[in-house]
Structure formats: structure tokens, C-alpha cells
Length: 324
Ligand code: NCD
Image (cartoon, rainbow, N blue to C red; front, side, top):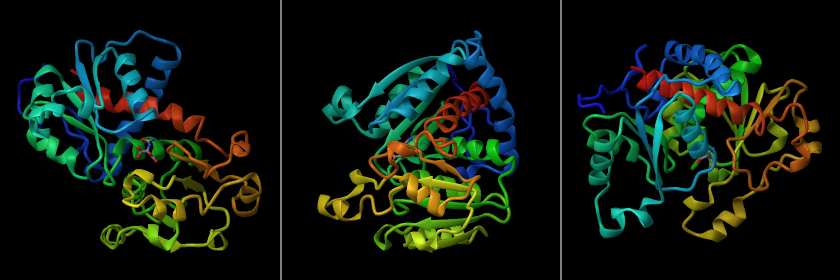
């Protein structure tokens, strides 16, 4: 167990004991360091090679929101590199949160048992708040409400890099819920780190980026093009990144029903608007916005490399943060 004060903020080439809260902490160089570790992690996972990279370390996975991939891949990643997990799912129901314990106290308690805390929470800013509360261990943001989902963006960037061997000069179409989609918010930050990327944002007007996020992103130099019709999809985009409309963020279910599945990828839609080399990504879960008939198309990577890269990239990240 760690007893020293953790380091915060920018990665700056050194991941050890750092919180991972936002893509804003990363530079191109940091991402390169992370990606350089991924092939080794893939070998460990695929060959079932015993690995002791973080042997003796215990990681708490504290998830206030449902999850399949993020939870499953983090839990697997920790074990693949020799660590152990304490998994607290739904603490609102199964921990002292029920009795009224504050968020900060909960974090302070779990840091006393562990070497890192992986946190998912429905409110934006909670990963940063946890980082303030925790005195000794790194916090890894596994999704803070509509805020960010940095490890998802890292695996998304890796998936794009694997295909195109670069992360600059790309046309990326992001579709679905720009307003509430934390994966979109982190991915756009990531793409903005590299020159000459254009991100087309396809959504109904009511689900456009907040104006605050919009001006924040264009201030970084990335070109953003907001569109609301499939007819404006650029020809031969390198990447399509589809997302679901985030039902749980709506106060009124009728508003959700009105806005969901405005843009559905069928085989016909893909043939009409995508290029031959476009890759089709989705952070999942999908709830109707990509039809299953598309799953066997070689361009569809959401159930293939994107999922597997989630495991390898999280292994690499945890190894860099927790390695002795
Ligand atoms: C995403 C999330 O939780 O933000 N899921 C995931 O982690 N792969 C996307 C979503 O729920 O729509």
C-alpha cells in the first residue's frame, strides 16, 4: 500500500502514481509512451503469460453507474498484470453510502485499503473531487457523468492508430449524442492533440455540444464541423464513431424518445455514405443505432479490435501508473 502523497496533473512523460482524470493531462508524447506498451500487453493477455508487473497491488473498482466493458476490462486488466481487485458495484445500494456516508469519506476509506481507485460516477467532476479527497492513491476516471471517459478515448485512439498508423490528418465523423456523450468529449480532446484533424459532429440540433465545450475544443485548433443531416457526411471519412443517445441524462423520457436513433447505420447506409477504408467504431452499448446486419462488415471494429484494445490499453495504463 502506498503511503506517500500522490503526484497530480500533467503526465509529462511519467505516469507513476498519477491520477487519470482527463485527456487534458496528455500530450502526444505521453500517448506514444502508452501505445508503446500495448503490444507487450496483448502478448501477455493472448498467450496467458503469467505477469507480475503490479503483483501485490490492490485496486478498488468503485462504480456508481452500470458498466459492462469498462468494468470487465479493468477487472481483467488488473488480474492480467498480476494485481488484485476489490469490486464495489452500486455503492448507493451496497455500501455505507446507504447510511449517508459522504462521497469524500467513501474515497478516503477505500484509499486506505488499496493502491488505486477506479471510479465511475453519474456526476461530472466527481473524478476530480475524488482526486482531491484521496491523499495517497491515484484515481482513474472510468466516466464522470457527462464529463469525460479518458481510458475509453485512449483505447479509441489506439484503435484508430492501429488502422491508419497515425493520429493526424484524419477526418472523423462522430454521430449521436454530442451534448451528453463523455466518450465524445474525451475523444475530441485526444484528436485535438494532433495536427490537421477534422471532426464532423452529426447530431440532432438538441444534442449538439454545449457551447462551452464547443468553444473549448475549437480553441485547441481542431476543426469541428457540426452537421444535422446524413447528406452532409463527408466522403471517405477515415473513422465513423457512432454513439447512443444517453437516455439516463434526460429529465423527461419523452425528449429522449424524440431524439433517439435519428441516425441508424444499416448496411445500406454504410454503403451509401462511408468509404471503403472507413472504420466503424462505437464505445458500446448500442441500442439500435447500428444494426446487427453491419457486424460482419470488415469495416465494423466495435465488437472486434475496439473491445480487445480496451483490455490491452487499460493493462498498459495500469502498468505505467502502478509499476514499482
Ligand atoms: C460508454 C460510457 O459509459 O460512457 N460506455 C463505455 O464505457 N464503453 C458509452 C455509453 O454508455 O454510451
